[in-house]
Length: 133
Image (cartoon, rainbow, N blue to C red):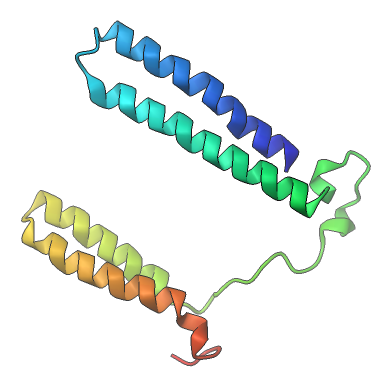
């Protein structure tokens, strides 16, 4: 994960100066763009730090070595839920929230409730066992 942490870490050194250049070019009259670019730099820094700490804890992966073979990366890559419907429900809740911002703000409250139900369902999906829907 060394290369990933370096890429995101270098994003900080790119986005922070760009934010100040953007602010200077707009005479500091448009704050949303400068703040957004600063936040992107902060996000890149957080992701780079996380990947750096995780890379030190996990160690070298086959992707990090030049002499690695393809078969070294075989095996279980993680735990995934191919039968889960909760991501679809959460996506519908997000789409409904955006619809509410465009059409009527009262719809956002319905979408917020649906999003809470979807998040709780997705997080606690395996508390009931596999396929226990």
